[in-house]
Length: 289
Length: 322
Image (cartoon, rainbow over all chains, first blue to last red; front, side, top):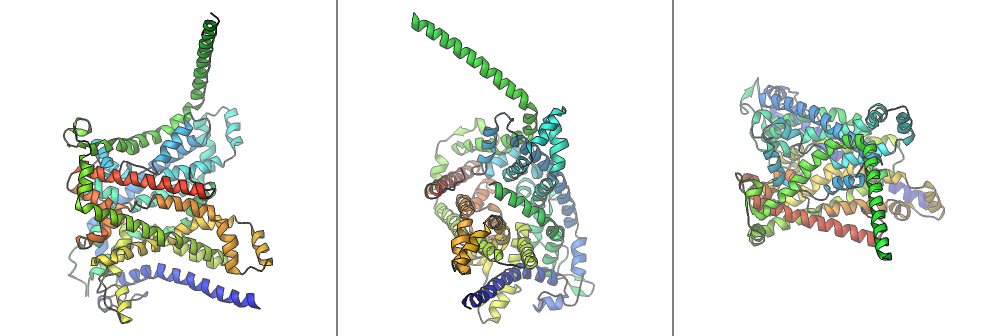
């Protein structure tokens, strides 16, 4: 049959295409992990594929002994926790207000936040605002200026809009004010949306580079990404790189890979479990436009 | 006389009207005051961190002086805009920004659509889910990590890409210091990072296509490719158009971060973009007014582009973003 032969070729093409995507996505990560765990001699000979050769943890020991990395790791965790809490609270409250037709100036406010998706003051005026608020070199410069995302507010607003109005109305009959409805009725119903948007924010803070890079000048406040750039991109090696640790040489390449792995481990570990929520969040935005 | 009465009654009417309106507004405000309270933090944030910087744009028409501040600095009109137009570097950074944006749109926009279409044809749910999960992974990596990996893998001596090229008999390529390679590396790594994630929105749109359309197409004797062409693509056309408008609007939005992390003076001729130039002029050299003028020029052109894309989309299809 013509169609079945055709269908056969089609199946091979599509599976081949998808496997190609899988391989080019995964290979760099597997190679990176393998190199970071391998013995010096094999790395220098360029013999590592996706399986470590001559298992060696010395590279990781060097990374984990570096005080800059540890300090910045701690800083990043503080920024992520504090930033996500603030951003998520503000986003949820604003989204709830915007989802209610009773909010005065609702259209104006919506227009006001959406406009910023298309136009902004830019890097320098924003920097000057942050500077004039005396935020430079404080934790707030990392957390506040880039915190609220218009996209997340809209996403969350469409989620709240999908909750049946009657729930809120009956609670109002029982004497709850808007804030009470938000707190006791809407929020408990929105755990999925809250965790989705919260994770968006958390990953955003974990990965953010530009804000901290521009607004911080003191190394003791640097988050992981800034330190990571120094080590991996600007080649400011950690410790005594050419030195010998035990009986193995520390190879700069392996050291960089180990640093990357250490700094992304939390995300690599959690993202397969979280992606379901993430996808739900994105889909929500897609369906609601 | 009569007209006087009517004027008086009209004004009375207007007064009553005004009073009623005021009452209504007050009532609405009263009803919504708690909602306003909930919106307040967001409002304050947007005013301070989004709209105050827009106001700060006026320093591009002034000789901004750190000690005098935005207000007291002297007006200089279009001095810095003229400076930008007359600067020999300008052409290069505008061209680089524009080309990177256009190439990104040209190569990067269709990629997730293709990926979503193919993934949509997979019947084995488990395989589909695994492929999808893997494809998201790079999206969650920070720009620093992606660029760090790029530098390693493209490195002339130790990177596996060059190893493959040389084992195939090619010559070693110094990707990161050859201006001719910058755009390719930038675009390809961008697609690598975003193809899976960007496909989500299309996959969501694909699920909303009525399956009876496929059945009808099969009865009409349509093969797989014809089904995709006549049913699937029209089914997600609105999503494609909407995203295309948004992406077109972002064509000049070649962010500062990735280029900054990737480039070095050896490849400025293709890599230096408006974002990085603004950073160097403004924050490194301290010429705030000039840098703001450059940044504003770009934002305005972006705004015009997105408005034009939206206008065209509305004219030639039913889809637009506003």
